Length: 245
Ligand code: ATP
Ligand code: MG
Image (cartoon, rainbow, N blue to C red; front, top):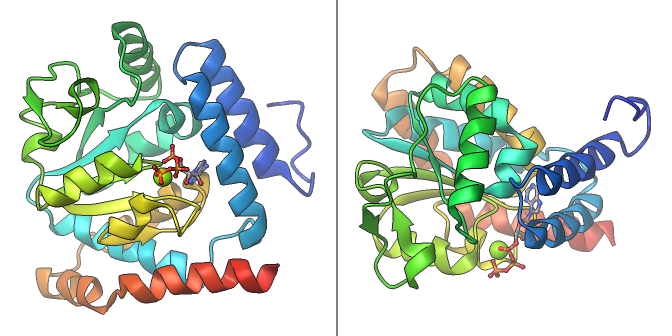
């Protein structure tokens, strides 16, 4: 990563790919995560590799949701852990949320590797190890969550989430924030707040918004939440991609 010149026109993309490769080597990221990264990279290219105005609004709405939540939880999978470990720890601190490891391909080894990786990046508490509750209507391994974590959360941030689990969480009645570069994927389609942006830009920007809103009243947060239009956000992202082509 240190060898990639920061002025390279595709710096972020190169760094992102490198982090996923390192994640695979360290046993944090599943090989399938590398394919997911490839799809994300293609959509980021079509979106211009920048945070659009609409994505910024979504990130602010996401921050408002997390700040006004009773029990917010940030979900971490193998790609999230490889790409933004320290940034997720910072966001969790800014909104007073828990971090929970939640894997599509769950093995004790990967759970352990991700937990250590998060602790190396400043996490003091990591959920997802108990796995003492189940998300209804999902097959066994993928349904495992913590009773005191995602299971009982009111607001969940699920970046790069698989469509089935995003739908199952939505069916549980949770307020769901999804970060996904493909606006047509099922996960952003079912989200209350679809954030169509690269996670490496989205998470730090959510933290910045959360810090700016730290002293906002519940009414101010509520107004930001109400103002956000999920359909418009999805349409704006899709038309940006179409016009980009
Ligand atoms: P499904 O419709 O079942 O969700 P999918 O093709 O979306 O299928 P996933 O495994 O859910 O398959 O794909 C992961 C998603 O994460 C993709 O939509 C991809 O665009 C997105 N993605 C990958 N890397 C990033 C990233 N760095 N930032 C944001 N989104 C990303
Ligand atoms: Mg998807």
